[in-house]
Length: 168
Image 1 (cartoon, one colour):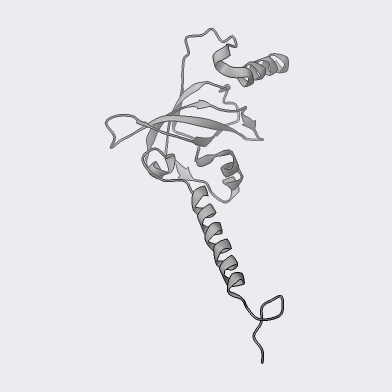
Image 2: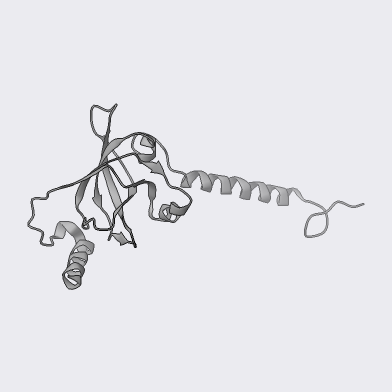
C-alpha cells in the first residue's frame, strides 16, 4: 500500500505546512473578530442592572408590536460603580411600538444587558454586542437645540429629519 495525498502521490512537507498555515491563519482571524470583554464593553455588565447613556444611531426598526433601536454607547454606571465608565460599541433595545425616539436623541437607559441570542445574531454584523428587551426606564436627555437639523447631526441626521417631515 502506498501513502499519498488527496491529489495523488506522496505527501510532501509543503502540503502539510500549507494546511497548518491555513489553520493558524483561520484561528487568528477568528480571534480578531471576538470582542474584548472588559469594562468598556457592554457585555462586561451582562446580568447586572446598569444605567447606560447613548445616542440613537439609526432609524427605528418598527415591527408589529415592538420597536427596536440601535444605540451608540457613551458610558455606563452600575450599582457597584461610583463613576461613569466610557463604553464603546453599539447596543440594541426593544421597546413598545409607540415609543418615539429619534435619530441622535441622547438617552439614559436603565436595564439589564444580555448577550445576543440566536435570533439577534444578525445584529452582530452591525457591531452590536448586546441587547435589552423592554428597559425599566428610558429618559431622553433634552438637547439645547430647537429640533431643527444641524451640521452636528451629519448628513444622515439631516436626511432622516427631512424624511420624517414627509411621513407626517
